[in-house]
Image 1 (tube, rainbow, N blue to C red):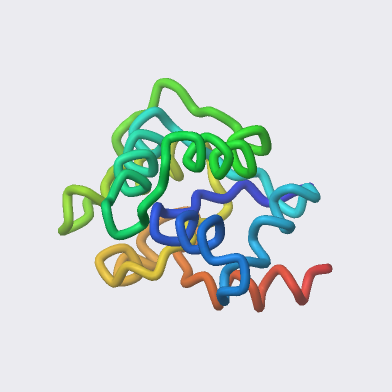
Image 2 (image 1 turned 90 degrees about the vertical axis):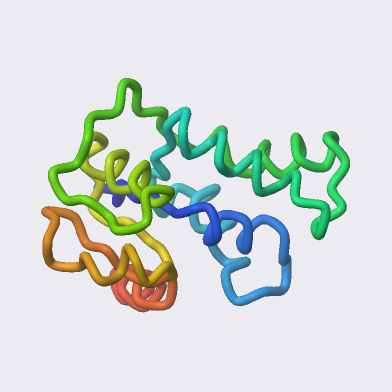
Length: 139
């Protein structure tokens, strides 16, 4: 059974924008069915907001192309319920809520505010590197 995974915005942006970066492998991982990425309205809105940052210099067509490499492989969770575990950084709460509601196996993030909650949820909260090591051992 494929892992149900919530990837935070930074992880998705890194995987999609930096084709030779350390997270580039995730594009192939989800496109070949290595996991089921979970998304919600809030997490997609956050992703689109970040893609509009001037530092990335992305044209709207570029954003649509990047999203086309990810969204078709995702399962939309709607509505999303509040996770009983609260994150110190309110902007990270939608990822916890999504993982909780979507019955995720893991939440993958490099964000310390999320990583410190590891062990307090029924789903794993792990770094992208820990996720890579765990799933590469399962393949």
